[in-house]
Image (tube, rainbow, N blue to C red; front, side, top):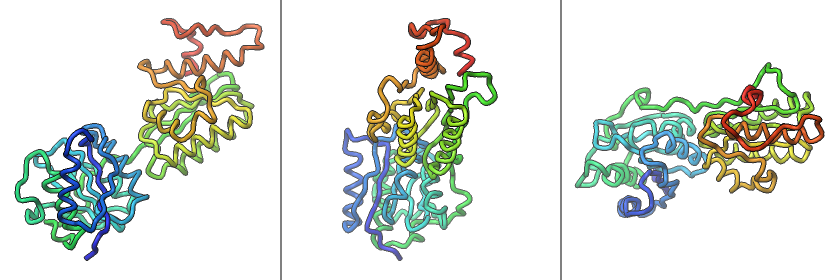
Amino acid sequence: MTRFRYLSFLTDYGLEDGFVAACHGVGARLAPHAAIIDVTHLVPAGDIRRGAAVLAQAVPYLPPAIHVAVVDPGVGTARRGVAVAAGDSVFVGPDNGLLSWAVAASGGAARAFSLTNRQLWLDRVTATFHGRDIFMPVAAHLAADADLTAAGEEIDVGDLVTLPAPERVVRERMPGDLVDPSTVIYDLEGELFFGAAPDLDRYLDTLEERVRTNAAKFVVLRLKRVRDPDAVCVERLLRFVREQQEHGLTVLLAGVRPDTLTMLRNMGLQRWLPAEQVFPEEDTEYSATLKAVRYARTKLAVDSAHPISTNGIDHHPNPVLYYLV
């Protein structure tokens, strides 16, 4: 039997009421020795994938713990609660895929139990607050003195609900197209976390070689479909930006989502990239990329006999530029 010194806690409860405090109180009453680490309570309501991503990003840096996660749009239905042993920790929450990426990041599920032992629940259980009434009390009992087998009926780990593996795609936007080699456009797509840094490094090394081979002057990194970047991947991306800018290449970031832009800025993007070289996400599929390409072509055309107009994005943009993107 392992006595855990820590509980971690992730939810979509928000911070405007007493839901989180009530769960903290239950944990403190049942396991007063255990410190509670709040991962976040600002997961968008019901967004299981986002909750799974944040938990998987955080877990590798947390101590051995009982990790409680509650993003549970199926609360009150037949979905089961589970306790899953993985690595040196135990994960407690709804069996809806929320735990799956963090469990995988911890080495995979070793054993799993359905939370059927009501003796570990609160005496009164509401239909819509299982975080307080079931998940936190079970976690606190496990952190204190209860064996994992006390949680309930053991289940096959292969029967746990899992989310599809995070997708990561880094690719050249225009392979084989007849374009000006002075501008290279790359797409980054999918979840940039969960061990994505080595893949990202490899692709950025390939891009750097491509830049040298073509003597490119501009690189457009299209980030519209990047999801849930973690600090490690953002640091790798910023290092690429910094090094390329120092070597005279102009890097343009196009289609940057608000959450990605916030993380980039928090980690110092403005020190290496002027605001005019960042083109945030827009409603139109290619509008940010189109603006970035026009920016590059305008800069390239300064000494050209046929400069390119840059009077904004009109309703009939240059078809050559649409071909580019």
